[in-house]
Image 1 (cartoon, rainbow, N blue to C red):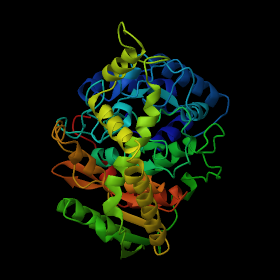
Image 2 (image 1 turned 30 degrees about the vertical axis):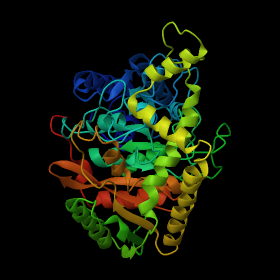
Image 3 (image 1 turned 180 degrees about the horizontal axis):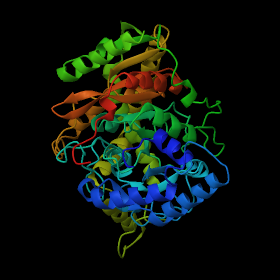
Image 4 (image 1 turned 180 degrees about the vertical axis):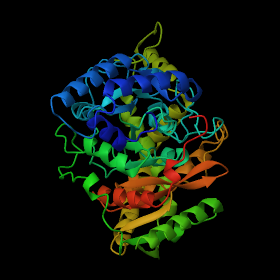
Length: 483
């Protein structure tokens, strides 16, 4: 049962081959048995899961149907879930139980999805390796000595290890697509505003976006269908009709124009990954796509711009965690200043502190124009590059990451080396574009992903291309040994 995809589970439930309750019990037992090796979950919600599974079975018995009705999933632990710990991977929120459900959680619950638990993540979603979590690093099921990517590494590791078929993640600079690439999954970052951010604990408000992680594009289409849509509670949510993503999967790729940016193939890219990217291009050509070289001239400025904008927004967003209203509070503070200093100093880990400091500096008087304002101007140039490119091509294709998964601890002493792993993913967040990573092969036994980018609200096009690619390749079907 644990090898079934979301689409196969939907068919199995509809054909009464098994019940949601039976499936939920199997997966909860599998998590209990295997997750100690991976550390992919922070909290398990067995009681809630069984209650939701029974309710889903009752709804099906009454004639209801739906792709997510009775399907088991998990949420990244920054989506607020009523009455359940929502920790954000931080000591700061270790004791926080959300008083309400995030819109994404509520929408998926209404569709009948069964929540098995909350997955591990980099603290406050800050990291590319899932090593900054207060609850310890997550291991990559393909090699337990390597990172699964971050910050949605818990969701990625759990799905890759077949502990469950799909999970939610969030993507601020590649935090869905990069772990998807490093664990052999399909991961989608929707257009900014497509999925509600209400109840999703913020890291960088103009960049964060929730999305699905699953083994196939077909499953991502099913999960995104349940997540997407306008939310009046979120001022950044866009009132745009949500198409039927599953219905568009089987469109022909004949004549599809694919752009491959020359800037992607620089000295920083592992040549073996470059070969796999070009192999995926050849596969898409066989399906009728037309490929041309394009240019994204301002891509070289993306990392410095991102690492000014994101920490600046983080320093503002995280100012609310002060030891006063909720979250961690230091013992016996002498006065208000001591309460603030020690609660934040003890509650936040080193990576979060580093980004708050960088952000506060970039926003300070005398430096705002030199850093933050300039970064925003570069952001506009990057967006303009994409708009020009999409006048010539329908999608852009390239590597998701410059390297395969690295060893746990290998980049801990050099944060900038870890930041450079986001070089191909962060441009989509700066421009607000949808992006998808799909499995495309292996290097030294570790998975490699290929990234697709499309114009605004063209998630369906990305899913269509990935699905057609997956019908003609089998990379996405490979399972890590022992799982």
